[in-house]
Image 1 (spheres, rainbow, N blue to C red):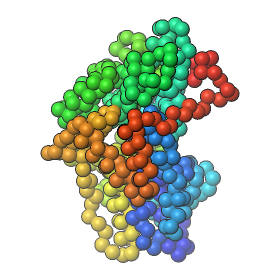
Image 2 (image 1 turned 90 degrees about the horizontal axis):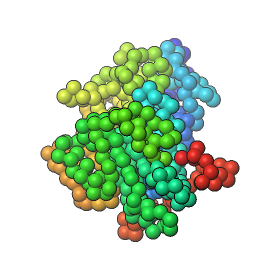
Image 3 (image 1 turned 120 degrees about the vertical axis):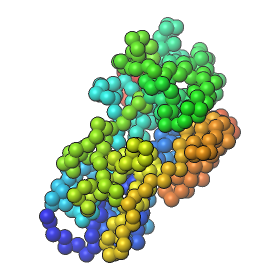
Amino acid sequence: MAESHRPHPRVVIIGAGFGGIMAAKALEQAPVQIEIIDRRNYHLFQPLLYQVATADLSPADIAWPIRGIFSRQKNVTVTLSGVVDVDTNERRVHCEATTVDYDYLVVASGSSHSYFGKDHWAEHAPGLKRIVDATEVRRRVLMAFERAELMSDPDEQARQLTFVIVGAGPTGVEMAGAIAELARVSLCEDFRRIRPELARIILIEGGPRVLPAFPDDLSAEAEAALERLGVEVRTGVMVEDISDFGVVANGVTCPAATVIWAAGVKVEQVGAWLDVETDRVGRVSVGPDLSLPGRPEIFVIGDAAKVPWRDGRDVPGIAPAAKQQGKYVGRRIAAQVLGKAVPPPFRYRHYGNLATIGRNAAIIDFGRFKLSGWLAWWIWGIAHIYFLIGVRRPLFVAISWFGSYLFHSKGARLITGLGNGTSPGLSNRDT
C-alpha cells in the first residue's frame, strides 16, 4: 500500500450527485483534502429532469457547476474525468486523465438506464438520467408535433402524435402527465393543421398498477388523475420490442414516433472497480457504517449501495436517501480523522414518497398521512424547492414554476440537435 506523505488525509469522492455533494459538505470543517471526481462539470437535480424534457424548465434551472458549489470550501478540489479503475491495495483511483491517491474513498457514482438486456432499444427509447437525455427527449417530443403539422397521410400523422412511456414509476407517471398537459394546454393554439390536444399519450407498466411504491389507494388516485388528463394507462403489459416505428407489447404493435424509457436502472462498473460481487442491478452490499466489508476506508453510497432497511427491503435509490448517506459518511470520516467517537450505524429516515401528475395533481405518502390533489401538488413543489436550497438560490426556479402555473406557458420550447440544417420533414432518424 502506498504510504501517504500528505499533511492531511485525502478523501476522494467519485460522483457529484446528491450523496457525493453531501459527503463533501459534511467534511467542510474537517482537516482533510477532498477530491471530487466526475466526468461532468455540474451537479444535476435529477428529480426535475422531466420538466426539462417537457419544456417547463431550462437545463440551467436544475444544474450547477461543481466548482461553483464549492468555490468557498477551500479543502475541495474538482477533477473533471471519468474513472477507469480503482486499485484498492495501493489506494489509487485511475482516471482517464490522471491518477489520484486516497486515504478514504467514497463511491457515489449513481446509476444509468437498464433495458434488461435489450440495450439496442436505447436508440429508440431514451431515458432520463442526464441533461443530454432530457434535451433529447424534449427535441423528440416537440419535433413530433412539427412533423405531424407537415404530414398529409393521416396514419403517419397519428403515429407522430402518439407518445409511449414505458414504466409507471414516478418518472413515467410525471412524464406522461407533463406531455399530456403540454399537448392539451401549452401547444393547443400553436398549430394550424393539427390539433395537439388529440395527441395520444400511452403509459405502459408491466406490473399490476402504477406507482407500485405507493399504497393501493394512492396508486388508484394517480391512475384516475392520469386518465382525466387523457393518458391511456395500460398495466400488466410487457414490452417485447421497440423500433423506429413504435412499440410491440403483448403481441400488439402500437405505432408511435416517440418512445420514452422509464422502466429500470442499473449500476455500472462499481463491482469491477472494487473487485466485489454485486446484485442483479450492480449494487454493492455495504456494512452498517456504509463501508465495504473488509475495507473500512472505502464507502459506497446512493444508487450504488445495497443497504438493508426494513421488512426485507433495501433503502430506496432516491435523493433523500443519498443525501442522508453522504452526510453520514462525511461525519464518520471527520470523526475518525479527529480521533473522536464515530457515529452509530447508519439509520435511514424515510420522510415519505411524492409524485406529481400534471398541474394541480400530486400524491403524497407520509405513512399515516396521505394526501392527493392540488394541495399535494403545492407541497410537492415546496419540497423540491427546499431540496434546491444549499445548491443555488431557489428563487429562479420558483418564479419559473409560478409563471408557468399562472399563464400555462412553456418557456423552453427550443428544438436543438437537428444538425446539418435538416428539415423536420426529411428524416425519420430525428425522431
